[in-house]
Amino acid sequence: DTEVTQTPKHLVMGMTNKKSLKCEQHMGHRAMYWYKQKAKKPPELMFVYSYEKLSINESVPSRFSPECPNSSLLNLHLHALQPEDSALYLCASSQDTPLTGGPTYEQYFGPGTRLTVT
Amino acid sequence: GQQLNQSPQSMFIQEGEDVSMNCTSSSIFNTWLWYKQEPGEGPVLLIALYKAGELTSNGRLTAQFGITRKDSFLNISASIPSDVGIYFCAGRSNQGGKLIFGQGTELSVKP
Image (cartoon, rainbow over all chains, first blue to last red; front, side, top):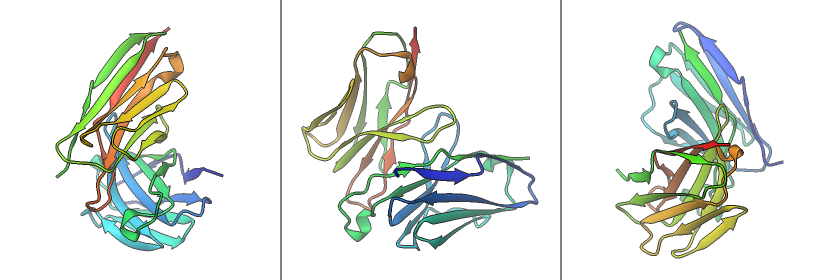
């Protein structure tokens, strides 16, 4: 199984709503990532979890709150978002991260959640 | 911060033509990756390169890790309509280990 799954595929939410994005992988990967991607632009790193601990936060606003309940799951909790937060949110996983000295760092991406904030 | 310059930004070609795109950096990378992203999907890893001068193929795709470690190219031979998508290069150095993405090359193939 080399798949990263994300739910939901599409999400429309108002600026006062609270919602969560979910990501799951069963490849035994110990690093998981959240990216934000605008149309026809490269993915922008938001957060990195390594061995279920937050290792990188790219100065993301607090209205985005990540959570890693276990090594296979990654959530992104959303609250009080702005219309400019509308984007494709991608989850990725890798066997390990360079910071921990693992031999394989390649990231495998999920299909993403298309988020629209109204 | 580190930046990758990817070119061209877009390409419109006829089915059967060969395609070439490249990425350059002002700093050295230890790993070069090439991803393809189709509409509504996440990026899919095509080729990974780890050594300067390395040339690697994946079907009709061939990529090379530049000798200077500051560039990489991707060639697609005999393009077909399903090659349509955005191709991203990505590099990684030892500094922090984050992937740095190029701006993407959008490929359109006319049957």
